[in-house]
Figure 1 (cartoon, one colour):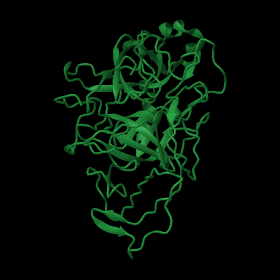
Figure 2 (tube, helix red, strand yellow):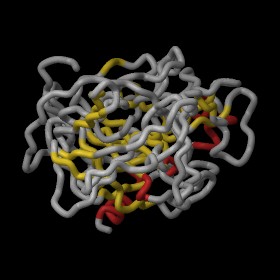
Figure 3 (cartoon, helix red, strand yellow):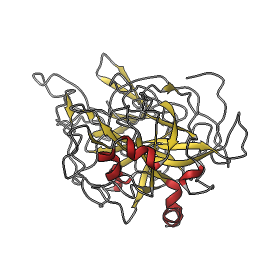
Figure 4 (cartoon, one colour):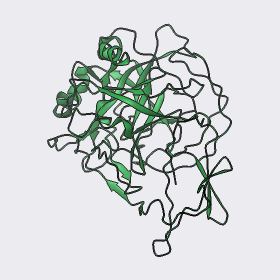
Length: 411
């Protein structure tokens, strides 16, 4: 397996072809590709005898096979269960705990890395789906717009169409040969994404994790599909966390990621608009927001494709009175709550994703979308590793952080 492209087995399972037709090879730019082979540990260890690039032999140059394998790691698919209270430093009320994002992560390896980030972990699962022709690259595009797709390709959520939320992105953490999906993010320019701080900081700390260990996938629809016409993978140059982020209360839970190279604007990848309206919460209370993610659905299963949920923004009073022991501790003037409390919610795995609202005055049938919130925390089901969708979700209020966003994007 690998996280670069689609794999085909050849030569009686002794040859492997890794394909990613959408990737552009750049001259004099090294490309690191991590892969591993599953084999019977009781048998002989496989040896790499040759590597070809576009049908040209690159290794070994002298025609001799390697004498030892490039790796001897063993792998298991047994899932880990991660403590849902691990991010905080204290216990929570017996009615329910705090759950910032996914708690179910199947282990796919034991790879090592010199940078052992104690990072926030999310969902990771396998799904394969063939790709198609590469989309057209656009020179420019209006933010927050969506190209209507001719056909379809969260908790009580609905399936989305590819390209319906072209700003939504997947954050993966790379450690050794492991690649783990941890959170969502939203593209806000060709080189910047916005997400929550707890997704990109060390646990119980304001310190960002190593940016070199993050991989951003834009235009992703199925989490485990690596070869698809709309997908772009980018590396992170810099992580900018709000200076007043509090990992215990999750206040100021916001961060900006700067990419090493610009995203290519297509029908599947384009930025969402930043908030331009009133910052006061009262102007958006009762408005219906849209949120997407790859979290758990109402049955407790990880969604295999990007799903969406529509939910109304509620007043701070309504939110706090619904569960005072929890919301009085984790809401503030820079957060808001949303949801129906009827099972329609965003759940584990959706952290960092954006809540978007149509821009006032835009076309009702083809609106311009603005980002107003970031999924931050939710109430955990008692003795469960998933959220309680009968409670509201707490969002970071993007409108209250425009100065920070503007400053970070200029760095």
